[in-house]
Length: 165
Ligand SMILES: CC(C)(COP(=O)(O)OP(=O)(O)OC[C@H]1O[C@@H](n2cnc3c(N)ncnc32)[C@H](O)[C@@H]1OP(=O)(O)O)[C@@H](O)C(=O)NCCC(=O)NCCS
Image (cartoon, rainbow, N blue to C red):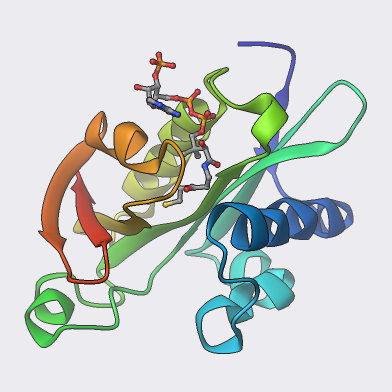
């Protein structure tokens, strides 16, 4: 891997983390910021830094710029009902906001950050499974998650639900 530092985000990193996240929402996903889906991006501190069972990692480049983000919270999927029951909130670690700025991709950052999130989830002791969803059209996303887990379900909108094993 190139010269990056991966660390738990501190309050000073949150502005840079938000830039990476919003850039992905606008450029990669094309949805832009949608309040009912992305409220955590606005309140990163309240969502990831304060709760003990949540975390937000950042990768910082040699100039001190945030190049990538990766987060985890204790919320399971929102729907459908069978998926909610299979991955209940509180017992499910959800990987979220795994975004790498375009110029820093394919250098192992996502893989390294996800490995740290999996360690965090295991150390918690209360998580029974690790879940995430990704969008079929997101650059690199399905390729990455297929190397780390199995597809549980793909819905008609092209959202692919994974369990990490
Ligand atoms: C998906 C994403 C996070 C991958 O980040 P990354 O740091 O480039 O990934 P890594 O370098 O750690 O790649 C790990 C493995 O994933 C796979 N992979 C990642 N990107 C890929 C791509 N564009 N094409 C094919 N395989 C890819 C490869 O198997 C890769 O291993 P390799 O490089 O040894 O072949 C990044 O492309 C991204 O931010 N995409 C847009 C946002 C997004 O969709 N995020 C996922 C949200 S669910």
